[in-house]
Image (tube, rainbow, N blue to C red; front, side):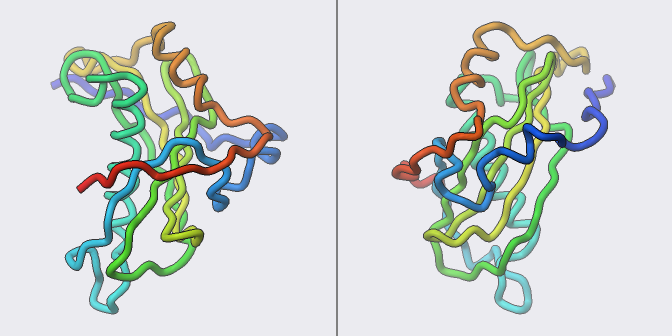
Amino acid sequence: MPTLPRAPEGPESGPAAASLPDARDRAAYRFWTRDIVRFQDLDRLGHVNNVSFAIYLESGRVHFLDTLTPGSVEGTGIGWVIARLTLDFISIAYYPADVDIGSRVLRIGRTSCVIGQGLFIGDQCFGTAENVCVWADTNAGQSRPLPDHVRAALKGYLVTSEPHVSGDPGPRRE
């Protein structure tokens, strides 16, 4: 069985990262996916369980990447694989609620990109994340350079120091 690509070393840092719009601010995102808090998402204290945070992020990430590069998340041939997920739990979330998942591109590399995400109920951010996604040949288990059309699609959502106006989170993903 082939070995899939590993995440690059170290988190994004430096002056450029410090000047990015705050990940907890809805205005920092232009791409939205909507999901719901399900009763099954709760822990024994009645809070949204930490695993459910990752599931909401996955829904947003897959929707985002498949919209930018259709068919690229099917898991066969050449497309996206996740190499790292760094998640910050900001506050407690409860059932019932609509979850808005904002997605943005923080960095584009030679074979990968960093997707930043925020989880919101209304205007309240309850989690943020950074995902390292690698363009890979899943049959060979090797990363591949990002094709020009993929790079161009990602650049359309690359974050600058200018905040974006948030919009409708779009259709609900259930």
